[in-house]
Length: 406
Image 1: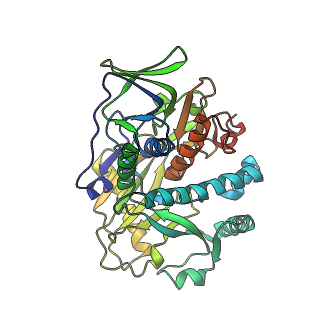
Image 2: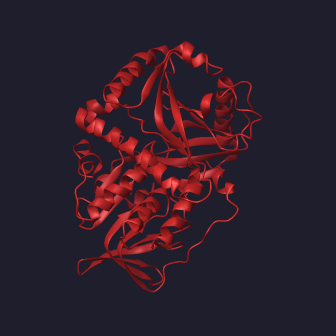
Image 3: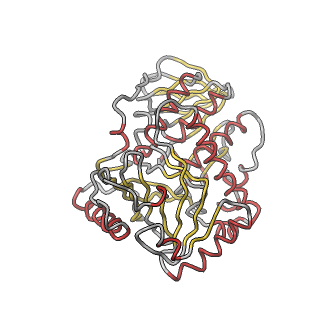
């Protein structure tokens, strides 16, 4: 699937200069070859390079040019699947471990951002997860109790707590600390530059035509004869169904919509720049930017192709604008930028991270779900450990042979 998004993207326009990297040429050798130069591939490349492991990122187009450009940059430890739901699905121990690993991944993203030069729009934020209706309130309270019981940084707000801080009220909300926001395009570009300085090789405009084994080595070849030999290969290909292997067929590619407002005169009605989302499915989500804009997204549809036609897309975007106006009637709800984008969801709501069940030396880093960037950082460290020959407690939970996929 080459059409990851359609419309007018915002994030790429926030950079006046973007580094470019030459295509793969001749014959190269590295310990790890990473296919894909989006958030997942560059996270892996940076972690491997800073760990002293020789690696190369092979991107068929440009770094951060596919789904990363349509990423809305919310970094949250809570997931589309609630902790309470995940406990029922995979058991309390594994569910809590997964949520804790997500919280840890946000901290790792914060640490990584602190090492990068310039302002990439990274800000620590709290999130307001509100009940969309009175009917959703009992499950939201149950979720709060489960999070609190296991030590996660949460509070519960009653309707009056919400109304005293925002120009709207809801039946109740969980406030989660420990989250963050980022400009995803700037973040990936800055990580790519830092990774190259740490020894990573990046090759843009490099499409792999053949992946074969040769004497126990993984060999990747392009159509024009360039090749790279590696001990390990990581597929960080985003939402590319034709690249999926084995268990990965048990995933769905859907589409979503997002928009960005003009710079607001004031964001005073927006309490502490909190990120907002809701219990309804599909859910609405909102955040602010460092230059005073609002990013809004949602209206997920069970179709794999982004809406190309402007008139059809504008019907959904107009609905997003109305929803923003309902929450913040005093703000400018017009949308200067808008797009439709593909996203992936696994059957059990967990990412695909780990070894290929059938091919030694092949790994996957696929952050399917609403927390793609968090999953990318989680995957980078998990795969680094596996490549080193170490074990990782998360592999049994997010690996491709996990019981919840059977």
